[in-house]
Structures are given as structure tokens and as C-alpha cells.
Image (tube, rainbow over all chains, first blue to last red; front, side, top):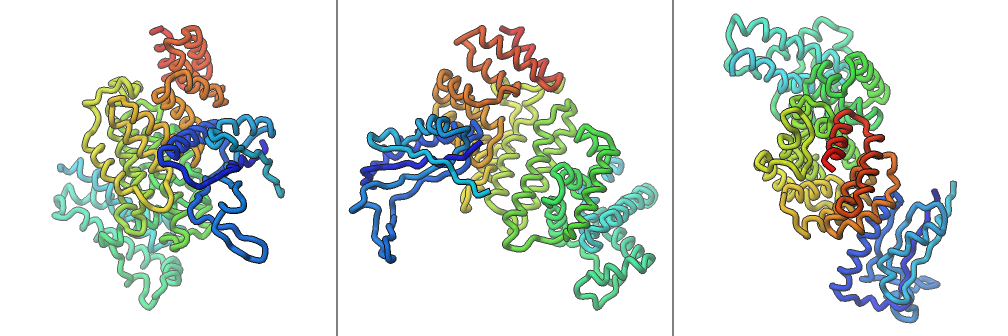
Amino acid sequence: MKEFALIFRHPNATGKVSPEQMQQWMKIQNDWVGSIAAQNKFVSGTGLLFDDAKVVHHKGIVTNGPFGEIKETLGGFIIVKAENAEEAAEIAKGAAVLVGDGNTVEVREILRTR
Amino acid sequence: MTEPELIPHLFRTEYSRITAVLSKIFGLDNVEIAEDIASETFLTAVETWPYKGIPANPPAWLYTVAKNKAKNYLKHHKVFSEKIESQIKHNLISAEEMEIDLSEKNISDSQLQMLFAICHPAISPESQISLALRILCGFGIDEIADAFLTNKETINKRMFRAKEKLRNEKVAIAFPGNHEIENRLENVLRTIYLLFSEGYYSEREDTVIRKELCLEAMKLTYLLLENELTNRPSTNALMALMCFHASRLDARRDENGEMILYKDQDISLWNTELIEKGNFFLQKAFGGNSTSKYYLEACIAYWHTLKEDSKEKWESILQLYNFLLQIEYSPMAALNRTFALSKARGKKEAIMEAEKLNLDQNHFYFILLSELYKDIDNEKVKLNLKKALAFAKTKAERKAIQKKMYSL
């Protein structure tokens, strides 16, 4: 089994989500991750908070972000076990982030150093 | 309590306390000597009490005798006592003059330290449980062999190897250091959890032994709760979990020792006192910087103490399993999640999820599928029960599956 990172991308993140919307997403996300875990294919993963986010630039310049000049941001990632990229992509279809039009899940195989 | 009952009763509680304190002094290498002295102490009680009468304070009497025997042993085994003396840190006194502290505090500290020593990752979980039953719960080798459905020789060999391993690893009877305690406690809790499960999920029909294993696991957890070093949210969570499970011990089996499914249980046999205790510990289990698997399992067990079905109940159980599976996968948790899903969202969705589980060697998987297909596709119900029968491991399981087949 290989491991793949499923990375949640928001091209137009505003960081503003209503609590109801958040709850709805959480539920979809929890069921989705629970389903992956029930298949023994969950490795690890986490959501990423928007609060207090920073962007560090070249030469150590730090800005609050990532909203501003870059709109695209990451909402989180999980790592799953799958035979190949196709299976990983199939798993990714259930991610809550895809409820939002324009959002994407990037599927990338984890580099193994051993 | 009359005399014939008193000695076995005292043996269960005091044997392990004496052994723990003496082992603490003699070191883990010499647990056998501590055990021998504790056994001889009881032998003396059996020999003298019938003639001289039961002493006013039986435990105190036992402690005095044990102390004397320990001192005598040290007097007659010079080489041994010199070795012990060199191990005692403030060795201004000789081993013979040494105070053997059998105060409440030192007893529980010694037992707790012994628990940490035994639940050492260097030895296998079975060995940890065997040693805990022997040294901390005062079980005989016969009883341990019985609990593991094996023979005395196997247990003796297992314990011998485990003690040797602990010796080689130089494991001390001591509290782990502060930076270590979290990890080591996790191992202790896991062993206790396995001990409890050994009793709770055992296929054996003998209810007495099963109950005793559960009870001993709870006693050991209680020991951990009494010390502030080990009274952590996860310890409380484990205790809550065991209380909730134990509350159904009497309702889970009929008079012939056969399993009664949760949905068919007589609620009046549930122990409400244990449920209340479970609630108490569950409240204390909340907090800490990480959610333990015991906390999630305790919450699931809490929902099961409410017999009435509700949308909220099954939705909560489903979410708890979602998180539990992320912490630790097990086929049973995967199946239970799917069952909760069928209750919360309907059978169609659950069947789709069940198909993904990849557990097609597991008879519980097919039993679950047969449940899910009920009232949807009767042929599939039959087919799955047949598969379940083929993979069932014990007679009791086959009997239960056949019963389902006949009732179709």
C-alpha cells in the first residue's frame, strides 16, 4: 500500500463561514474520514484553522494571511493508504471541501525516504 | 464473617499487598521470595487461628507475622541480605534492622509501582496480565490457566520467561519519571483494559471467573485513581468504560451461559449503581490535552446505557466511532460504526459502507450484512448467514447463527 496526501484547496477563501455551514461541513467531513478509517485506510490528518494564520515571505517578512494578494489557501489535509493514485482519487471524492464550487482536492503520493 | 470464609477473603486482598511491599524491598528479581513469605504468612494463619482464635485485627496480625518472617529470612540468608543492603540507598542500617513499612500509603504505593513494573513494554501483554493476576490480584496458577483456557505448565513457563526478561531489562519497582509517566501509564491502562476484556468478552460459560476478572481490572484502576500521579482523565475514562460495561454483566447471559444480545436484554438486570458510577467517572474523564480512546469508548458505552432509540443516540454513537477509528482501527469498531450508521442514516447507506469494509473472513461482518439486508433482500440474508456460519470460530457462535437461520 502506498500513502497519499489529500490536500484541500480553496481558491477563493475568505475565512468567513457561518457556524451552520461549518457544522454541516464538519458532519460531512467526519463521516467521510470515519468511513476511510473504518476501511483501515486512514493514516493521519488535520484541519487547518484560519484564525491567526500568517504568511512568511522571502527575507523573513511576515504578513497576516493568507488573505490578501494570494486568495488561494489550504483548508487541511489527510493522509490515506491506497493501492494507487486512482484509488486515492476515488476516496477523495467524498471530501467535504468539494461541496464548495471551485474547491479542489489535490492527491499527492507521499515520498518515502526508506 | 466466619473463619472458613475469612481466610480466602483476606488472601485475596492481603496476599498481594504483602507481596508488593516485600518485593519493593527485595527487588523484582526476588518476587518469588516475597511470594513465599506471603504464602507462609497465610499458612501460619491457617495453622494457628483455629486454635488461638481469630485475632482482633486480622490484617495487622498478618503484617506483623509477615514482617517477622521477612526479617528471619534476611537473618538466615546473609548473602542475600548483603545484596539487599547494597541496594538500599540509605544503608546505614542493616537489612535486619530495616523497617518494613506496611502502612496504607506504602502498601498502595508499592502495589502501584509493582503495577508499573509488570506492565512493562518489554514483555508480552499476556505475560503482563498473568503477572498482574498472580502478584497483584492473588490468583493461583490454576486460576490463571483457567482464565486463559490453557494449562498450568504454559502459565508457569510464561511467567518464568517474563520475570527473566524483566530482570534482564533491569526493570525497577518504582514510579516512572515524570517525562515517562504518560507513556507508561498508557501501557498500564492497556493491560488493565485487556484484563477486563478477557473477562467481559470471554467465550467461557463460567460466569464466576469472568466476573472476577472484570472486578480485578476495576480494582487495579481504582488503585490508579487513588494516586494523584496516575489519576488522569484517561484513567477515569477507562474506569467509566468498565463501570458501564460491567453494569450489563448480569443481563448479557442467560442461565445457561448463552449470550443475550443487547437489544434483547432485560433492562431490570442492568446495575444502575454501576451506571451512576460510570457517569461520575465519565465527568472526570473530560479534559486533558488529548482525547483518549477510552474516553470515546466510555461515551459510546454511556449511550448504550440509554435503552431507548433516538436519532440523537445513534448519530452521537456514529460520530464517536468516526473518531475512535481514527485513533485506532479495529474490525469490531468498523462493524459497530456501520451498524450505528444504519440506525442513524438508514440501511441503504450502511450497506454501501459495509461493502467497502473488506472484512470477508470475519463472521461478524456477515452477521452484520444479514441484519442490514433484513426486509430488503431475504436471499441475501440467508446467503450472508451461511457465510457467517462457515467462518464462525466457536460452538456458541455457530449455535447463535443457526438459531438466526431457523427463525427466518
